[in-house]
Length: 224
Image 1 (tube, rainbow, N blue to C red):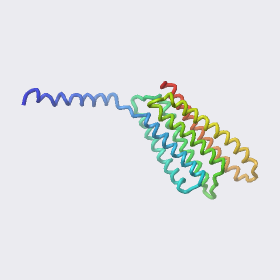
Image 2: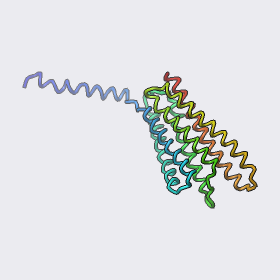
Image 3: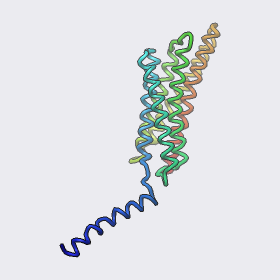
Image 4: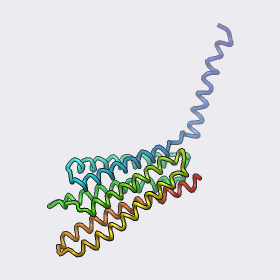
């Protein structure tokens, strides 16, 4: 065997060694665009389950919301861990943190709403206002999820998604005000108290969505 052929393996091994050193110094950056897409899609699914629950009050939707809340927590923890360990990020680190936290809070709100409506003693049946607000929440979440999905390829186009989310949020707020006005015409104070709490939690989910939407716009401005 020639000296040239004997030297070849060591020359081939050199790039691999160099890559290992570079990876140690500059570790691979997680695909934060994909993580945002995955988490926002999961939130969209949870919002859909809340609409299903408000429309049918089904036991199947109840169990699925519980599962969605657990998976949402898992995704949030994983994403925040990757963010904390990342050497660098393609998006402002604070924006990513806000998005991961508040996306999960939307799912937590969906779960809390369902638990409170099921009640320990007597379930509270969904009414028209609950369903309407859940539908607007779902529309807003869907728009924000679409916006996050565009960030990696066409961030400028995400502005239109943010505008759709804003329209849905304003509709949710109008429905809340109308529902509260009608609710306080009732004489059943127990019903007033319980429904007011549900309406408030639906509005709280909308507030979390609004933070996600503002974060989406902040990211768009910085990327464009």
